[in-house]
View 1: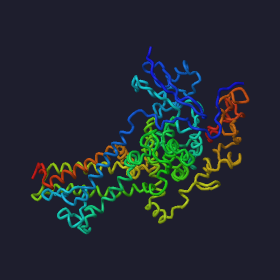
View 2: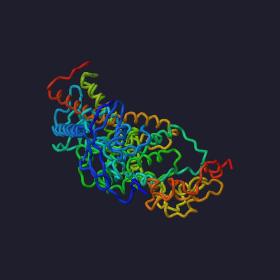
View 3: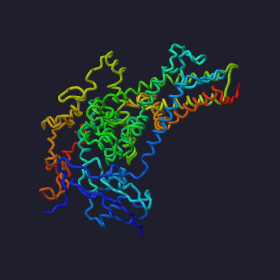
View 4: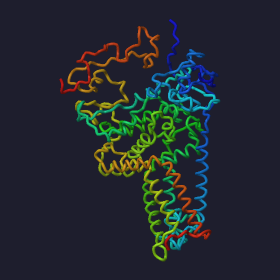
Length: 267
Length: 349
């Protein structure tokens, strides 16, 4: 009997295709933009954090989020929580919060995707081979610490409260209530920071994702539904907050340095 | 009458092969699978390709089109420019059988290893009641058509074949999540199982599985990340660890249920002992014991007629009888006599 059927037997070989990838679209654009965007932001933030000046506008009580809460002797009136940190140049004014914000973004499920793909090339794009001979994922040191994301989330929640406090204080100019373009920018930044923080996958899990029976927890179910809606925009919010942080900081730096004045609506 | 377009199709088997050039007529409204069928009807009658429904619902025609894992029947020719050469290759991650057909049994083995639904001990069949909001998360994952594009595109196994042993892949993760979120599933150890035996930690959430899913299941956001967070609850959360110490929660709560262990879902009419890891060590009587208590004797199940590799043959030509063997075993005749049916409610007896 003749048969043309091939039976699967034992360990077999994959199809021998020599090309590493056969993708013809420009799959390298997304990782390239990510590398450029994240590198530029990190460079800007690092320079700004170590400038140790132009972080506060005394007239309108504008404090940049990169220096909040301000905890060294250089802070002057910007200090809301004391100035107990040493004034050594290597210590940022917000040395107590910046590491947690960095950890929050480093362990964020979106940023992980972004930098694993673009910086670590693991993989650079779908169906494009990754740049490493071996791979153990997040099963062992150091990447197993990505599981600490929810603690960074708790910290980021507290820091968002501090940022909100800064934005509220900024309405208090020396002549009483005041309102300018800087206030709008600070408020927008805080709203976006809250949106990014609440859209976090860990927040979604804590809000209600961990439940087995939504019907027994109607309030948590509604909160979970709200966070889930935000969560679908987590990537956009991650980039929007990088932009609002940089814009807020730049505006306050410019007003503080006297490059241009704040546009005031009231007082 | 359509126009001729350039195609490259991988032809070969496990001993080797290469991309071969074809010029095929393309008409308006056609998809890549139509072109493969036209190739079979004209130039290459021996071109091997799996297909079935042509509607994106059976998950058979998975292939790589211009390097991207896709369903042949859901990839419109109108998405390519007219002068573009379209490359069609088999799934890279799995061993090739011939041409566009690959041996995807890796996925079935991983599916078989995943513990099945464990019924609650206090409910008899027919008494299950669930609210829609409790099951809707699991229902998203039931949309899976098992095309295995996610398994194929996942770099953990695609680029590192050695991880196949430790890593079950996105399709199995959504199954784990589906059951862990199921309101009536009685197993408590799915998180631990996902981490220790399915290799959940290998996933670095680069989301290619979600990108290629033809059913648009949010595999990463709705299954893998929630499962990772559930593992964090159990394994990496010092507050939970402290809580378990203070409230003296049973230390084995998140351990895998061992063979012969009496806790979990042992009593009542439900399935007993969910001890899948050593299923092959059980006797037939124990298998019957594990079954649902139907209030009558249920004969031991017959093994299906599979070969030494544990699979049914791929074609009836390879069998020693006419027609393919029944996957239910040779002793089962259809239609089954009513008293052999196992879906009767116990109260009806």
